[in-house]
Length: 293
Image (cartoon, rainbow, N blue to C red; front, side):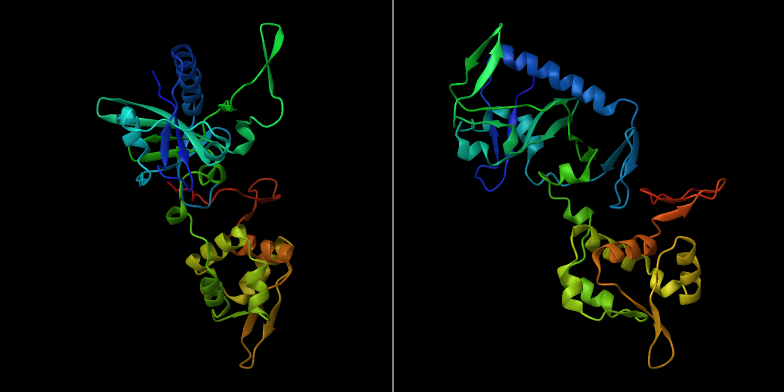
């Protein structure tokens, strides 16, 4: 049967264990076991590269994930994990709930994202419905969600949503966001002009910073001429502001309007495409190349 653990942030120890009634433990094992089946059912696996948003029938994975918090060790030796303190302060620090099993030398961990909205607080007067009547909740409680966020099979981490998974696991090394220094370096790329670098940095949210990083890695601004870039942008009605510098070379001026900047970065990162049959224009969520036979 599954043991239920909590992964906490800003807390020592980082992992704690729930003391469960036997009947509750049996029901929880069945409940989460069905969630694992649903998570894995009919899913195509896509290796995570920071650029692809999965469809409903796809799952992302990182093949060699560093289990820095030791969730696998907790599953392997649950009695070594201390029992959680049932207080609002501690419950408010839970970032994930997880269970798992070890079979044939392989440890599998099932994880759910958790936030304060799933805590049933002792504040106020809380009720739950049971056997045709409402009863008062005397102690603190929590809600176990109806679906998994991620599964860790040994070192292989599979997940459906980068946003949900990054709430409890550090995925920084797998999904790079440009730093302020990186944006400053981007602004100094030959052929690029920024009128106010401080303003550009201030409006750069996480999405923009990820796009800056991907565009810089692709070196599209060095590989594609201003003429070719302008022709492609015209097809998708993306306004590009090229102006001649002191040497007569065409320089791309980055917009300082957030929406215009995002459209430009989508274009530079090749998020726009035209369908091959109807010639319709789309924004894609995939950067996977099609291997030609």
